[in-house]
Length: 369
Image (cartoon, rainbow, N blue to C red):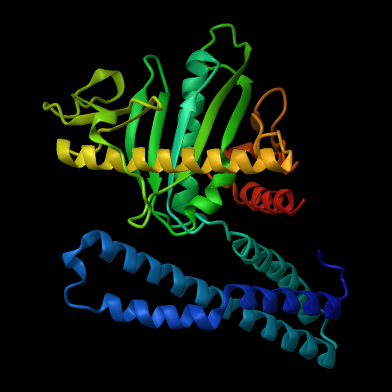
């Protein structure tokens, strides 16, 4: 938090940036960039498309991170020179410009600092996000679709590729459930703080008496499995169903039974995929999602055992984690962090960075408590 004393604020920002540079290990990042650039220039890179995409994605993220750090370092150095120039010339306008840049730097460095908190075992991975409508009937289905748009807009703002694997449409409006992948490094660590129950209060557009309606939707975020993960699923534990893909209103997406639904019999976990034309492709994607869900289930079971040994009986997230009130007033408030804003339209358009950053900091505080 800026104090208004330029030298004090500049020193604090410089110390924070030095700490970030140390934690992220910029030298190691540059060395990794050299290795990935060599791999990316290999003539046979695209013989394995999955590996090629992973290499190019990692390279792009690392280059962007290093450029971001260098830019902030340059701005910190430049603002010191700018303020000194303003004082030497007695120019109040230049001094005010330097003070404004200090505030901008505080925000930018604070955002980068959050990245250093993503140090969990799976935080660096891509994410699978599932949204399911809860209590509230057609309003809840509409609310689930609003949340889907919010997260897709958030990802779009950050340049994160997404792919929707499966959507179950509600009869009147909205969706019953949806699963989509966020194909960006650290997507899981970032979005995992969004897991939980989201509550919407508004005047229902589906009520002819214009009554206020409260509806709920559940968000689940799990890390994508990697080749090093050991999640063996015997064939006799899986039931495979194929069916015809469909869109809103039952309109056929294609005319073959290419959609695939997998049921893991021991746990009852069901996943499906219908975004590809090929049944084999849909089955492979559904299997990857099932493996990710089982991996997360095993991880949660292990964490529950640890919590029990610690005497921690409470769940990490509780039930309801955020409220979105559109009537009788405008307010989005996170129950865990107490982060809030009255700009509900911006939040629903994907501007949720402040909530995610507060959630990541809150999670670290809880872990250290």
